[in-house]
Length: 301
Image (cartoon, rainbow, N blue to C red):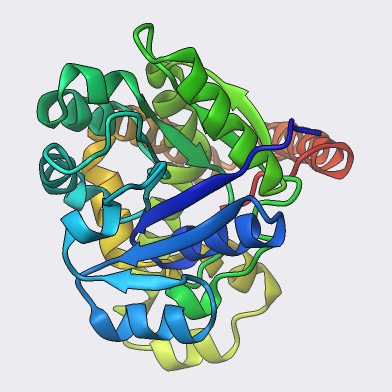
C-alpha cells in the first residue's frame, strides 16, 4: 500500500472518462480536499459538478490551477501544446503537473517547449493503461484503474519527489505503477493499443461502405462485437493519438500489412500448413496472454 498522501487542491484539465475517473478514485481514497475541473464546455463541467466528480469548475485556465498542488491533463493530445503554454504563467512554485496521454514523446516535447525549466522538472508524464469505449464524465467511475497499470515515463531531470507524489496518487486510485522510457512506452503502445484501434476503425468503416452493410451488421455475432468494440472510442482522441505516435504506428502497420499479405498468399496458394501454423502460434500466444491477465493487473483500453 502507498504511504498516506493528501493534497489540498487538484486541478483536472479535461473532465471526461479518464479525468473524471481519476477524480472519483481519489475522492474514494480521501486523498484530496478540493478538485477543480477545467474545460471549454461549461455544460459538461456543470454535469461533472452535479455528479460530484468535481467540487468547482472553471472555464479559464488561470483560475482552475490557482494554488493547485497537482494538475492533471486528460484532454485529447492535440490540445496539449496550448495547455502547457497556458499553464506557464499560472502554476504555483511547487505545483506538480502530470498527464494521462496515450503517447509520451509528443507530450514531453510540448512540455519541454512551453514550460519553464523549473516547471518541466516537476512534470511527470503518465499513461493509465485503462479505459472503455465510452467517453464523457457520465462514463467515469472510481474503479476504472483498479488492477490496471499506469505507466510513468519520468526523464533524467524529473524531480524524484514529483514522481513519488504522482506514483502514490495512482496507487491510491487502485493502479499498479510501472516506469519505462518514453521511447519504450510509445513503441509498446503502438503495438498493443494504437494498432488494434486502427484495425477496428478500418474494418468497421470498410464493412459500413459495402452495399450489403445492413445485412452484414444484422448478422454479425459476438466475435465481430468483441473485435470492433474499440471502434466506438472517441474519434478525435484517436485521431490525435494516430498522428502523435505516427512513426511507431507506421512501423506496426507495415509489419501487420506484411503478416496480412502472408496470410493472403497462403490462402491463395492453398498452403493449408502455413495457415494452420499461423493460427496455432496465434492461439498459443493469446492463451498465454489470457493467463497473464488472470493472475495480474489487467491492461484494458
